[in-house]
Image 1 (cartoon, one colour):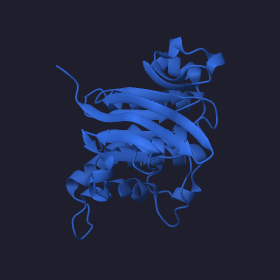
Image 2 (cartoon, one colour):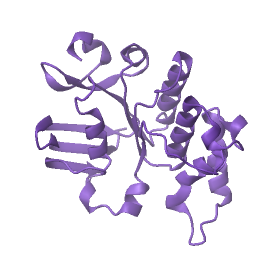
Image 3 (cartoon, rainbow, N blue to C red):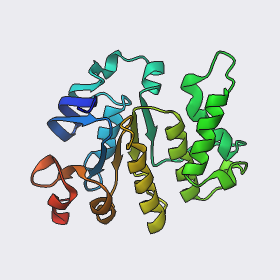
Image 4 (cartoon, rainbow, N blue to C red):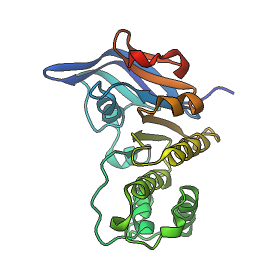
Length: 235
């Protein structure tokens, strides 16, 4: 059975007035795939993630979600299609872990903003999956950076979008925690209902867990290949 296309960018050019980061790149992403985005600091990883999520506009070229140009997708519809986790932890005051994770259900809330039994079920599943059920009632701001990272990924998970984008999701985690998160990300795509793109500097873990990388290389530009084919000296 053929996989469904979730994301495609065509002839994409990204960058800033004084710096071109990606030139005329085209690529497709299908449901069921997990792709790691790698490259040196400042090469354009975060800019690419912001562009394919609709947060930034490209200098030229297009981004499509399910064959629809992202510029023609309403904010509410986009929130049901793409969830994002950045490296910056928001300063959330007076909310428990459970309440922060529940924020991911906002695209589905009714006019009264109340959670249904389905919402609660999804939230409880996320708390267990990401190992934060034990701190569900704890104030979010009292967590360690590693725990906050798990909370943010859980919030993206409960948003139930077909595309999840994560910028350095294993930052702040120890080795076991990083490997655990990568294992979970792979599990999330096993049913063929999600695709995940995440940026990372952890080449050793990526080679062990991920089949495909989008890589910003020094000499070959933007390439798509197996992690083992990208030499560390290229990044």
